[in-house]
Length: 337
Image (cartoon, rainbow, N blue to C red):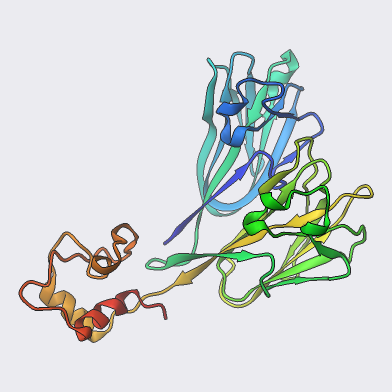
């Protein structure tokens, strides 16, 4: 079945840090440029904890091995794995922990046990991999801008970021975004996902961003916090869900600011849908009579050899010239139902 890889930077609200964590930037660390996107979260407090949840079959936590780093413990669904050591000679984007798990929701904690001696641990990014769909399916991505009709805003609460002076419009994808500036629970937006199997929402995080909640299909609302001490960052993952199943889905995000002036932003959504393929009789005959190796029938025309999920190859059509009938028969291999 298809595997969907999700990468979240340390600035993503999907990672929950306790109050003892601090941002690492080039302003106070000359090695910041060696981290993914030039930022990281660091901790030197006893039992400083970072938590994140995901629906996946494997995950990786990345950080650095540095001389002033010490021990840490990983907790996966209440199972403790202690005595990892992050000390090293300034090695960056290193795997601090990875594991294969069953495909379901998991909760993971990273705990700084070296903090009792003033030693550090940091988080650069987190990656997880989800099994989506069934064997033979293919994931098809679609980028949905904030102005798409599938986004439904409560217009009294939302406005385009062009009207928000402290946001840089040019740093939003395609130069457009939406900001919720009103501080009441009804200042929400909905995204309708008609046939999606997975969705990621992108926005911003920073000192003026707010806490918010996300609710999928009327289920339990989950709270996140986009407030951090970094300068405002754009293109940040603010929500992700996968294995949604068939049918229409709805995501409800609600702005929950702690103080006046905090806002929730929406930049765009990345959707993944499932494409299924059929082999009709004429295409099957074509395969049986013209099967040899080197180049996919379909990819011969589109040059997308590596994307072919059928792995059916042909060096040439031998002495038989191309005809519309054979071309259409071959193309049906890649036709979505």
